[in-house]
Image 1 (tube, rainbow, N blue to C red):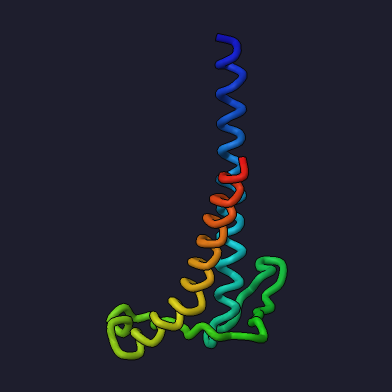
Image 2 (cartoon, rainbow, N blue to C red):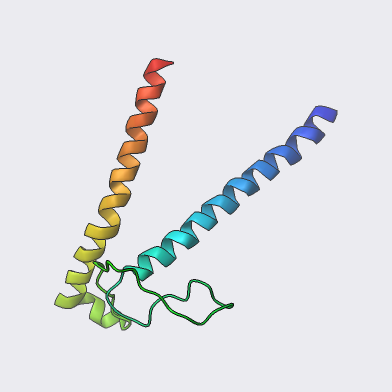
Length: 109
């Protein structure tokens, strides 16, 4: 019984750390991806400490329409392809690389 009382909080803490790291990675990547768009006002990376807004020097991702009806137009299609190319492609490549590394290390063990 004592083992369970010691183990369960340790597992819960470990899962909370994983969750916190996952949310942090998503927040950072979201800001970087927004800074790679070709429109808008820029990203306030250091808000609320500074109101300065930033873009990255390389901005290949097209800005999506605010109006949902425009998302289903020809322009919306171009934006979807832009996001698929510049966001989906690297994400898929990363996942495939991780899976390949896991498979390679599993066969060695």
